[in-house]
Image 1 (cartoon, helix red, strand yellow):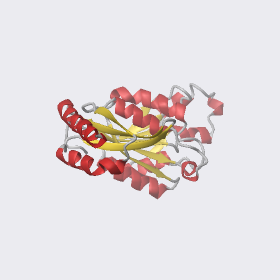
Image 2 (image 1 turned 30 degrees about the vertical axis):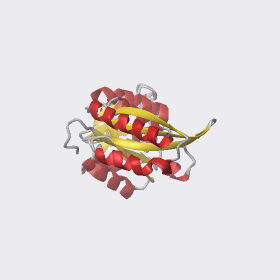
Image 3 (image 1 turned 60 degrees about the horizontal axis):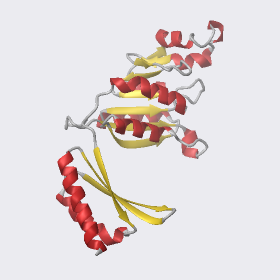
Image 4 (image 1 turned 60 degrees about the vertical axis):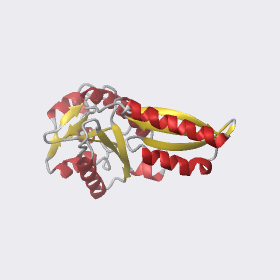
Length: 246
């Protein structure tokens, strides 16, 4: 857990063989990253694990001990390989069974006679968990401790994220300044940039090359929570680039 009260941290745990095989292309990581950045939560780690109980349990326990929040996606559907709920219950050392609140949510979409054993798997919730509403297909996610368990289907995950967003503690917003380095290659400024970064320990400085329609381009990004510190580092980067272009 963070000791700096200005920082709230998070990890994303993506669960599913289909992600690791490449059959399904993950869309949730970027969505969650954008969402958390916008509300001043630092996404620090992303893991992808298969539909294997030990791998899921180990990852949940490792991540929940290290970060303020853990957000999982995938593995809460009606099929035999949807084992996320059971694994999270095991990680927390609690039981799991059909939750009557979750059953009531499913009945908003399905007739009682259609709630077969497969569909009822989506109502199995670890004991002591709070439900996350699912306005899209009704089958809920849940929160237990600092772990938020959400669907893998992107539209449903987004709906669940919107549900829990207002309940999350947030930190101090990260400020970001971008300095265009043009066509200067990283090798020209890497040493000087390292010196600037070392002199401004409260900010993060990164170099991001890309190939655009205009050709090779470089951007240097300065990030931090103290506006004055960010500006001082930005000015040094600008001065450094001006010097190298002479």
